[in-house]
Structures are given as structure tokens and as C-alpha cells.
Image (cartoon, rainbow, N blue to C red; front, side, top):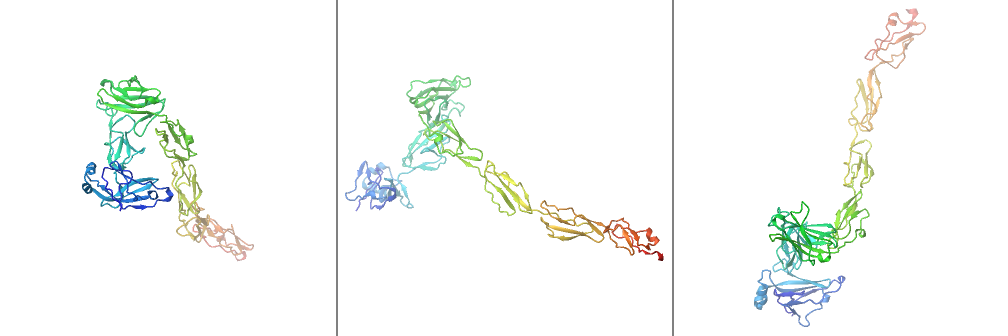
Length: 553
């Protein structure tokens, strides 16, 4: 039987805590070899398994075991460690734990909670990172937290600094905090406003402004100032001169620096300056400005010859344009894209104290407008290009007219210049039947679409003036004006033994007929004096007279 090792809070885990009736899983051969035999240390002394009881752990990937551990609500660990075995048993509870072999190293232990849901949890607790004081920036693994209410694993550190510009807030508390079994090494620090924000109150820490007229500098994730060698640096302590002279002190190797009130008229009564010309490595240190009331603020300075990867050597988008001031610490590269492309990513990147750029270079993405899908059979696309500056051209099917523009352009903001047009059916107005006329043909009664035909005629004793038929055209109008019916007298025929002059098919109102008789025939005298006249209603004033033989007159 494998002995059970009772582990109290004074135990230091090498990897494994204590094992009883362990179970094993074979390793995944695809990820390499196993791990060495795990061990446990009790009060500084390594616990060695009994001879013959330790399996070959190099062939295993996971070990599960029973362990008796102090409960989270147990008493002080030192008291537990020094108590008798019976009292220890009262303070601990048996739980199932496991360790896993990952990349040749044991990871764990993870244990199930007593009366829990069966999930394996780390024995050592994480630290909570909840609401953070205003103006404080928290970094974890060189990444700035933007959302809180999270946890930091045991034995990990976070960095704290005040928001930039550097020197405008004073950090009250340590800049590095370590998480140990759910407890931070110190309370979360706070950022105290300096004189710049307190109307130069004597009771506030002095603001320290940083100016780099030549060279470059940047702020690291711990809130320190990193300066490139050879730069000119001015640290300006903001404090009203009438309250007394501040004092600059430093921890660098330099014996002296040029300090004193600024000489500019608008600066000499509130800026107490420390100047470092052509910064060198030995200027690294902590610089403190202390007011006449003993209140101070500090800047941590580190001189470092930092260069980032030159921009031309990066894998840049072929369409990306850039303007670089250099690739050393604090220098910035600016990007833009040509017309027809938009910038995806940061418009500029800065060389950080870590030697990395603040971001990866952006991409130039071709501007494309949303695709156009026409599901209306009446609307036809005759040209289509959805990239910047190009266009889509539409037309309507025969018999339909367009509402909107027939051409839309893709703009630089990936939107179309106009809405997609629509097509509506072209209809001609109902035809007007002329007075004394008839509509004798209508190919589309009540709905006269393009191509519809109507035909007119006139009633008796009327003549059609104009085109007898009209067609509905694509502009929504009829092909001809509506005809009209004009009263006309019909050809009356030839009189017996005579002729009429003029000879026409139709006679207009007011037309008179002249009748001539054949040889040997004459008109009676009264009728010769009053020939037939075409009246306004399309009738003759009287019928045609007859020519009679003159012998019968």
C-alpha cells in the first residue's frame, strides 16, 4: 500500500503534494517525452518515496492522487504545521488532486474542492483585480488592462503607473505588485494630482514636465522614462517661485547638473529646471524634485540605445505609403494609403523602450462598396464595378421608365453615391375620343402600356382630321395628336344627264355645287339659280336637281 503523506500549509511543493492510490495516464507521443519523477518537500526536507513504490514517471502524462490539504478557511499555517498529527487531521480535508506533464515539466497541482462541482482548481489562489483608482494604468505581461473585474494568477506580477503625460500625477505606492496565494504584496497604488491640476497648491506634489528638444524618449510600461543616448533632456518642476526654491536630487552617477529657474519671462516664476545635455549611460537614475514644504515627485530615468526593426525591412502592404522619422526609441512612423484604398490599422506606430513598435504596420485595403443584387427583373445592370471611383450603370426593360439616376459611383468611404434606381411601368393617358367620333380599336382597354394601339373613326357626315391611329411610346405619350371629326358633306353622286363641279369625296360646310348638263339637257331655271350648299351639320341644303331635255322646258 502506498503511504498517504499528510501535507500542511508549511509544505513547499516541488511539483506533487502527496499521493495515495495514484492513477496514471499515458503521455501523448506526438508532444515529446515525459517528465522526471515528481517530488514533495515538507518543511524544507524532500520526501522520498519508499523503495520500489515510485513508478517510471517519464512514461506518464498525468497523475491523480488523494491529498489531505488545509481547507481555505483553515487556521494559521504555522500553527497547523507545528500541531500534533491529530490536530492536523482536524484542520485538513482529503481531496483528489492531479498534476500534468506539459512540455517536459510537471504543472499543478490542481485539486477538487470539498463538496464542489468536481472541477480541478489551483491550490494557490489568484488575486482579484477589480475597480482601479482613476488615472492609474495597470499592465500585465506588457499589456495594458482596459477592462477589470478579473484575476491575476498566483506568483505573477502587475505593473502600475499613472497616466501620461509622465510626471503630471504622482504614484503613491509601489509600481510592481506580486500576487501570492490570493493576496497582493501591497495595496493597489493611487495617482495623486500634482500642481498642474491643483492651481499650484503648496500642499500638492510638484508636476514634473519632460521636454526633449533634441533626440527622443518614451515611457515604458512601468512608468519610467527611457531616453536615447545623446538626447537633450529638460525636467521642469512646476512650483510657484514665491513659495520658495524647490530642490533637485538624483541617484545617477553624475556629480552635478545644471539646475535653476527658467529664464523666459513667461516661465521664470513657476518652472524650476534640471537640464541634461547629451544624455549618457551614467545619467540613468531617479530624479526627485522636492518643494520648500518637503513634498516631492520623481521621474525614473533609464538611458538605453533602443532601435526597432527598420520599417522598410517589414512585410508591408505594397500599396502602403509611409513617412518615418527613424526607427530608434520614441520615433514615429506615419502611414497612409493611396486613393482607392483605406487604412486598416493604426495610422502611426512608435518605437517603444522594449525595442518593439507600438503596433504592427497597417494594411491598405481596396475600397469596395457593398455588393448590389438586383432582384427586380425590370431593372437591368449594363455595367458593374464596385471598387472606388467605378460605377454601376442601369437601364430599365422595354416599357418601363427609371426613377432615380441611371449611374451610381463607389465613393472613398465605401458607400454608393446614390440609391439604386427603380423601374416603373410606362403608361400613356387614356385617349380622348373626338367629338362626333368613335374609338373603334383599343388593344389594352383601361391600361395603355407602351405599344398599345388605339384607332378612331368619325360618325356619319363627319370626316376624320389627323392620324386615325396612335401608339403609346416609351416616353409615356401618344405617337400623334388626337384627331378630330369635322362635319363634311358626302359626295352626292352625279345628277342625271349632268355633272357636278367640283368633284370631291368630301365637301366642307359652305361648299356649293355647280351642276352642268349634257348637250341637249338643261336645268330648270329656278334650280339653276340656287345650287346645293353643304350645311354645317354635314347635309346638303337640297338634293341634286335633274337635267331635263330642253325640248321639255
